[in-house]
Length: 80
Image 1 (spheres, rainbow, N blue to C red):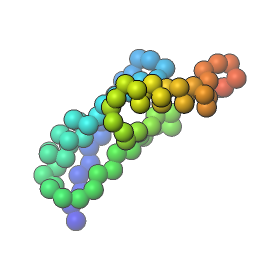
Image 2: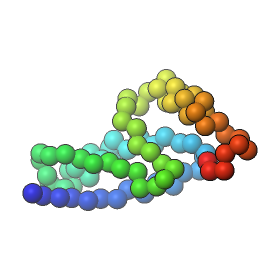
Image 3: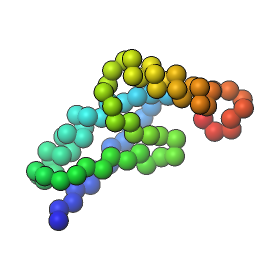
């Protein structure tokens, strides 16, 4: 069984950002030389996440609205 690991690092500047990583994941697949198998994409930080969806502005706004409803930014929360 073949394995390939690549770590991607992103620096963000805003409280909440969405970064399209499709091309970087595709490049990693091509570099691996593996032609068939599975890919694991994981966020390695407690306040980061990975969404698998279309990169479409309406969906991104819906996600923003949902997150703000679940945990609104304000003094009631100690960790943002």
